[in-house]
Amino acid sequence: MCGIISVVDRAGNLMDGSKIKLALSLMDERGSGEGAGYAAYGIYPEHADCYALHVFFDNIIEARAAVEALLRAWGTIVHDEEIPTCDQPNLKKVHTPWRYFFKPDAALMSGSSSSEEEIVTSLVMKVNTTVPGALIYSSGKNVGVFKAAGWPEEVADFYRIQDYRGYIWLAHNRYPTNTRGWWGGAHPFNLLDWSVIHNGEITSYGTNRRYIESFGYRCTMLTDTEVVAYLVDLLARRHGLDEELTVRALAPPFWDEIDAMPEKEQNLNRAIRLAYGSAMMNGPFAIVVATHKGIVGFTDRIKLRPMVAAEKGDRLYISSEEAAIRRMEPDLDRVWMPRAGEPVIGRVY
Amino acid sequence: MNVVVRIDAAELHYTPLNRMVRAAVRDGEKEIVIDNVLGQRFIADGLVGEVVITVNGVPGGDLGMFMRGPMLVVHGNADHAPGNTMDGGTIVIHGSAGDAAAHSMRGGKVFVRDDVGYRGGIHMKEYEEKHPCLVVGGTARSYLGEYMAGGIVLLLRLGETGPFVERGIASGIHGGEVYVRGEVDPGCLAVGAKVLPFEEAHRERIRPLIEEFCRYFGNDPAPLIVADYTRIGPASARPFAGKYTWE
Image (cartoon, rainbow over all chains, first blue to last red; front, side, top):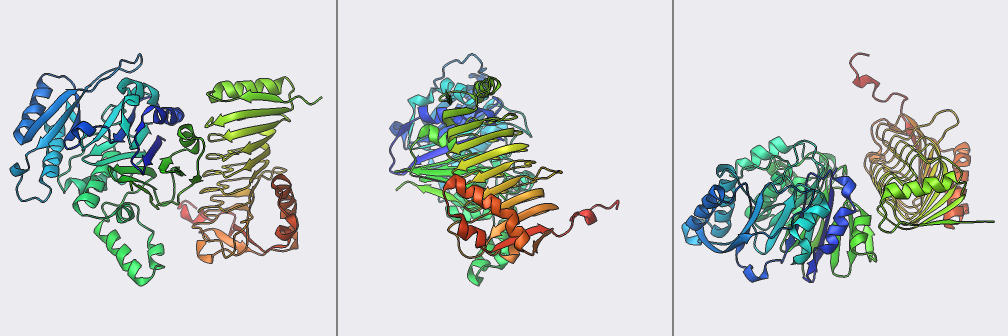
């Protein structure tokens, strides 16, 4: 059991993090105080053209020097600083969160149509697998993840998320079940423009991990949700599938449902299931994926985890509980329970 | 004298809230109104007694779990599993309920004005004089009556025409009955479930439930009483007996 909530303002209006902190804290019972986190889009307008790399350092001497050497080899550090934090009585600061605003040198990675992204992805994988005491957990432009091992309100106050203003917010309260709780294992998970929050467990993690690692991704965060971020990056960014087809590949219709479809649709769905059989996710899940363009929420096909959606004006909300949404916005235009496996999409206009 | 105890639940965690409710019931109060409810789970759980509790707002999950006797009236949507393993009493929801409404209920009644999510009535059971009932005014999602062992699920589908199409209806049912107004897509009936004849005796069985539903929500019972229903029950008392190799 975990708690998730996200909101997108489709007109791009900025919201500070104070309300989503209250909404996530309302679902404290969905977690165990071992992991909570927030992600927001639009928070770094002054460095919107740089990749914002958020890094956990175990120490800021050797680990930091190693990361900075790699970054300087592949591009320019435009600005860097320790992420401001505010000590909380019950939150042990076991890592030092740092951020780099980084411009990769595209000329160093020839033969790719998305050189900058390839450089950043490979740097994330390289640091996370080869630099002891360093973990890059957020690497997109104008987006940032703020997470730690603690309760939702402690983590929010630790990072002072009320000081950030974004047009998309994701928040997650973790109840670790299969692996221990730690800072890197808290959600959201991010790679480039993709951020993921997830309630449930990916029982197909082994299959999905082998599949995704065959494309060069490396799983380092000791928890299943990480593969979702990489699967979405592979399907949506590298293979160019749209949101609906990506969700269909990850949570496809049952074969008997495909059999009952008109021929054209049948062929498409068969092709997706066959091409992406190893990307298909099994087990109970409710997931929200975000990019700078919007959010997509979906659950497993037999609906083993809760998900509620709501709208108010330009804002679309997706959460584990309606009450959490109403903590942010008491007066909603519409509240509904999306069907299992069917995406709820909130696109920025 | 008719004193109503009012509790303001704004910013209140469910533990102190439930303590206040229990104290009021212990003091012999017969009517409690809880205002500004937002996400507090476990409201009135395990509560025993004759009391009417009005919940104004959106409560959290497991409302009325293990409850025996009270009546809960919710003005708002309930979250997951209202009436979870409830033993007796009544829950009336002026709104919708989340997944697993009436989960493992073993006595009493739950009335939902609008819709329920997935797995409504999962593993309801009955024993001697205890016959739990879940009555839903709107519609339900897949796996309605899953693993049902007893009791009645009545789905009125107000405003719906056409057959009821949702996967896995009464999957693994081995006791109790599911009544669905109108037709049910035969392909949606799960393993272990079977359409049974709907006769006058069955109409008489659901008639008091329809009348009670209409009393709460102001609907006209007449057309619902004469309507056609699909009655679904277990194909056998032990649908999965053959799955176990030692038999």
